[in-house]
Amino acid sequence: MKYVLVTGGVVSGLGKGVTASSVGVVLKACGLRVTSIKIDPYLNTDAGTMSPFEHGEVFVLDDGGEVDLDLGNYERFLDVTLTKDNNITTGKIYQSVIDKERRGDYLGKTVQVVPHITDAIKNWIESVSVIPVDGKEGPADVCVIELGGTVGDIESMPFIEALRQLYFSVGQNNFCLIHVSLIPVLGVVGEQKTKPTQHSVRELRALGLTPNFLACRSAQPLLEGTKQKLSQFCHVPIGNILNIHDVPNIWHIPLLLKSQNAHHAILKQFDLLGVAASPELQEWTQRAETFDKLTNSVRIAMVGKYVGLTDSYLSVVKALLHACIACSLKPSVEWIAASDLEDDCAIQTPEAHAAAWGTLRNANCVLVPGGFGDRGIQGMILAAKYARENKVPYLGICLGMQISVIEYARSVLGLEDANSTEFDDQTPNPVVIFMPEGSRTHMGSTMRLGCRRTLLQTPDCVTAKLYRNPEYVDERHRHRYEVNPDMIGVLEKAGLRFVGKDESGKRMEILELSDHPFFVGVQSHPEFKSRPGRPSALFLGLILAATGRLEAYISKNQNGSV
Ligand code: GLN
Image 1 (cartoon, rainbow, N blue to C red):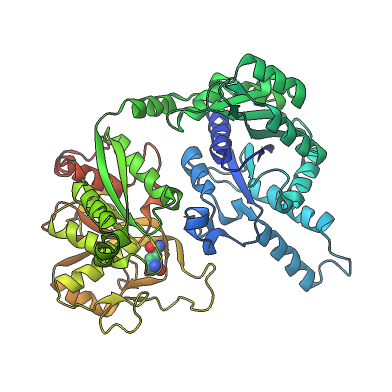
Image 2 (cartoon, protein in one colour; image 1 turned 135 degrees about the vertical axis):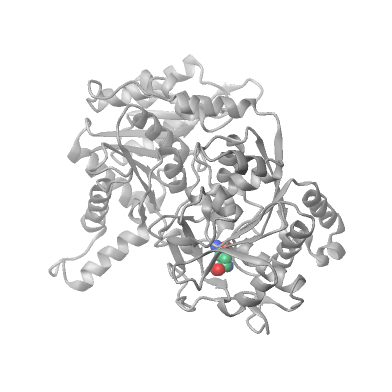
């Protein structure tokens, strides 16, 4: 196993995850099999209980792991299926060590950070790196490890020490350290400053780790003089100073690395030059360049709760991007805070209310993504009603599906107080209810999580046609509430079509409306399995419908191209 460790210095938010996954892409393009591990030094066991406001989206894996959104980047970039163990947190490590201590496995020894925590980290890395994630048998050739946070953080110390020991034990031919840093430009003179990088490399060295590569983030390409200075002061060969300057879209980054011969230098260190081929990145080049040239755009109204931080819906945005590129369109995601659509807002902040409605009315389609808690629910219901009545394409994901059921029950069945028990546990018309297997006392990892099967009920629905008529679809889930099985009969009678159900036939998974160009609600999160080049079927349907091309696509196309 060859390890590529990616650390970060100077400031957070440098795009370490994208850098690390791009390194993986380039090595994969050389013919190597690549897996990845993300280390998050926080104490949470997993990202499941973390607020999207603070930390961005919670990414869900096939095995039900609720993990950091960077794992989504790895899955999309490397086209792999990771496991929950590919995300290591301080919480998980301590939990495993304390469990062992309680079992008496340490035979009376004093249990300490060094060596017990550090050993647990090393063992975890070594055992997870060999899990196959690309559908083939046997371990990958390379494991890219991203250490979250910034070097010098107290929380990451045990990880740094464990990684130092791992480096020492496997040797330089099997371990390569890439340190991502920032080269700011100060003042009118516009000089590229190397000092912050020098300091963070010094910090890394003080902890016993020597970077083999620097990946320098900058606005403009690095000047030769800047590289020389970095090489001299940071003790890194000039050929190993990589520069990730700003590019129009992230698909350029693997290309940027290739153009700087990063693959050659890494393979050289790994003694793999004879084994690996030169990287084939045609698909990436094409995607990056096509995207830059797109002119026509499609306006997607995203009506949600966490719209202040767009990372909260990262995978939804990526899935829209994948679908739009397949249709040669540029996505224009128009964020609408759901609460701005509500009547109360018209009184308190009329400008915000008018602007939100203006954006909604001007959009080509509406998407209500997943969410928790009651803020903005009424606004989402109004958006679903608007889309239904005005025949604007609508995709409701998880909460967005539940919203469309509540709206339908209120407007069409005339049950004005219909609600989900998540928002009103006393409602006389609970159309969405808490699932029997849920827990009300423990929040972490107690939802219906991960890959679950949906049986399609009829080939005569948009969903089946978009998925190309399979018997079933497997998508990832993350929810506690479901459509009330006792209300299905009345809802169906009133025209709501439940075209996808789980294997028991009692749990509603996908709904559609006839008499509408595209109105789909889905209990799962299809965004998590969308890939560049392989857009998620329902996102593609939304974008096609938004541009009036859905029918033509369905009638003519059963072979893939749009
Ligand atoms: N809050 C809803 C539930 O728990 C929806 C969850 C979601 O959108 N992911 O069922």
